Image 1 (cartoon, rainbow, N blue to C red):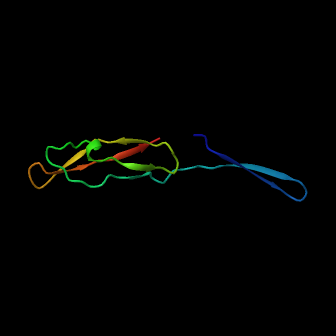
Image 2: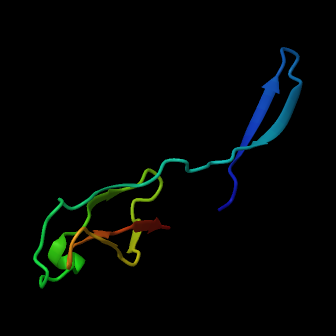
Image 3: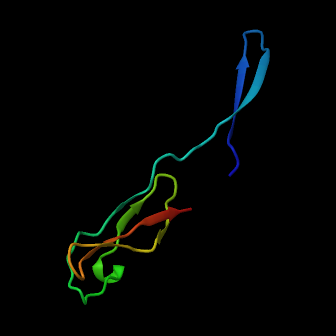
Length: 95
């Protein structure tokens, strides 16, 4: 991305002019936002696919109106008994 230049010009009462340029660095420091699906409890033999357990919605970013969202691999955290676990899903937004 090209760095925007700002041209600064000052003119005195006698008509003398000085012109300089300034580089303006635009930096995105605000993370994207989204709405996660509601927490749910499923049976052992139910599907854990995101299509069946819920997907994110309302993806928004201050610098990119068409953000690409990628789901990273699920992490399974064992629970306190057999066939009991939590699923951790992480999403990443890319330009």
